[in-house]
Length: 174
Image (cartoon, rainbow, N blue to C red; front, side):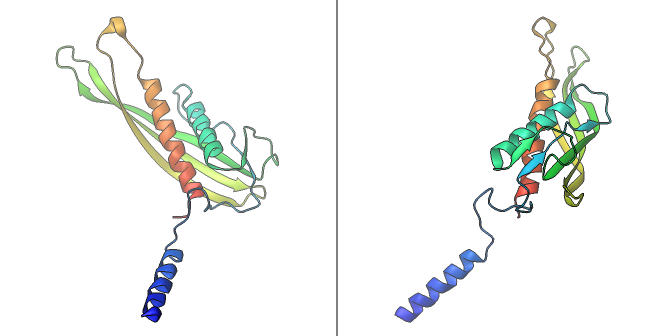
């Protein structure tokens, strides 16, 4: 009886330790010698106003919240152990629905495509994804007297989702 219980306990212990379970933020694709990460303002290939700034700020905030690493807002070579560079490749606003009374669009879809690369001090690529695609829908205001521009908050929500996904992809080893 004792031998059976001991065998079950060992099997459970082996199963728990072998399943890949770990506390969030403890597993990382980053080498242990990376303690500072530079995040220069993302580049952009689109004409939309400040999308690259919103994405950069969201990524810096997410890295600061989820790592113990020091985050630097610099592009100086050698200032950090690793550098995270991003580029906004495409940003498209598409009407989704129309108001039949006015004939104007009543909701839109924003689609942003970005490329991100994390390299260490020696230029070795630690992480790369050249095709992040994120979507965010927003409603437009039909009443012009109470008009509120809704595309900027939609871009901010999209930037937050982008940052959460990017930092999870970099840090979590699932």
